[in-house]
Length: 106
Image 1 (cartoon, rainbow, N blue to C red):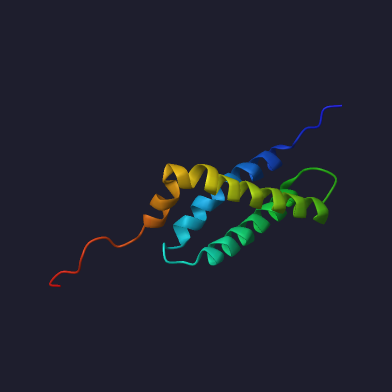
Image 2 (image 1 turned 180 degrees about the horizontal axis):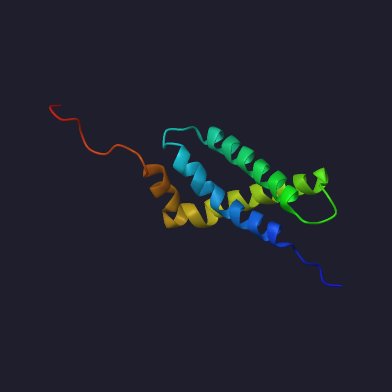
């Protein structure tokens, strides 16, 4: 017997890898890390429950959605500290929309 994952689960996993960058885009450098973690937790919860909803399987299972939430959060945290932060992507995401330079006449 070979276990297989539906396309919805693979897409949810890929979204979990990208969510830390999204959190960086909607927050600033001065945003507390705890606030960023709660935002990532909320986004991964949304991801987990939507992936289970999109799954064409036997129907909606809350237990599967919670497991997907946990896997998505763990994947997001690992992607942030193992990929996005060391490569500088997290810092660049935080700089998007930041005002650089000085005011005229100051």
